[in-house]
Length: 67
Image (tube, rainbow, N blue to C red; front, side, top):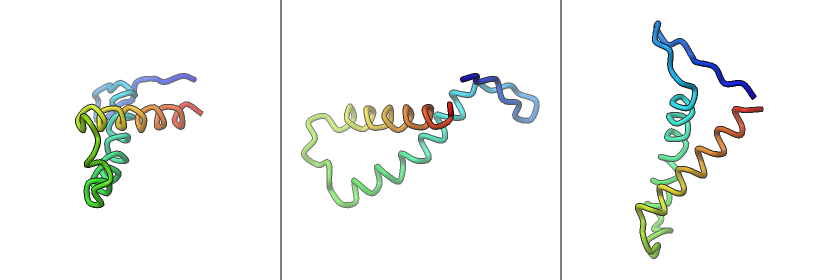
């Protein structure tokens, strides 16, 4: 597993920032769909729950990108 900096228009960007954007793009429809159907209205701490879900999605993106 070797992540190297990515050159975007002459600016070197850390690979985790690109992976974080990719995870956010996958996470947003998941959250909107769950909010639309009211699946998580009984969650004790919604902000903490959604942060944990974002970390799960980010971890999956990093694992997929590392292979």
